[in-house]
Length: 225
Ligand SMILES: *[C@@H]1O[C@H](CO)[C@@H](O)[C@H](O)[C@H]1NC(C)=O
Ligand SMILES: *[C@@H]1O[C@H](CO)[C@@H](O)[C@H](O)[C@H]1NC(C)=O
Image (cartoon, rainbow, N blue to C red):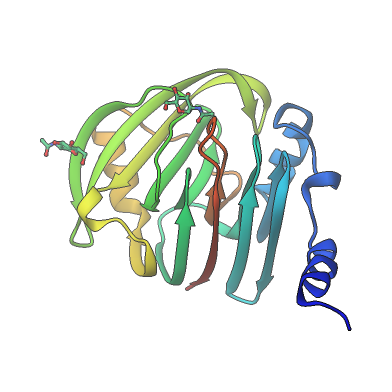
């Protein structure tokens, strides 16, 4: 008789793992540029079990990262002023976010509008630049500097913009929301943090990463419109 464990092991063996993925951002910077132009991205690093699929306007992910393991996956559209509605489930444990994410050039900026998270674990210190509301929700705007890190232009030094919902309004579990990107971009600009040229897509992503002994796991199913 085939045990349940054996069936589970066989099923897990079919799950795409990180073995074929680039081992770090640096070796992947060309694909980082390429994937920002696609309507769907799914990228993993390090070890763990990762599985994501996109079907029309919906994508689903499950992840269980080991040390150094993480993923970025989500649906993308032409970047700029847009009202993005999302709904679904985001059941995350450990470091990572459910966010709208993108890049600009001139200046080179990586930007995030973070809607949900379990553990926020920034790679670099965040500096608070201001608080505002959009679509009835409160956000805090932070910036961070990345020095000689992977970017859409290869290894570069650049600024990251992070708008983060207030702790009381963060999305976890059953989630839905509306992101009016122009509100966020305008607030950043009013504080002296403008974006550059939108040459690529922006994405509604599930991002998860390991931070020391804090490992990421969870599932998400997100429909965007
Ligand atoms: C992990 O978290 C610590 C703070 O707990 C932080 O100093 C460090 O930069 C983080 N690393 C990453 C890769 O997020
Ligand atoms: C801005 O938001 C941050 C994070 O939610 C909070 O700690 C801070 O108190 C807020 N500041 C103001 C002036 O509301």
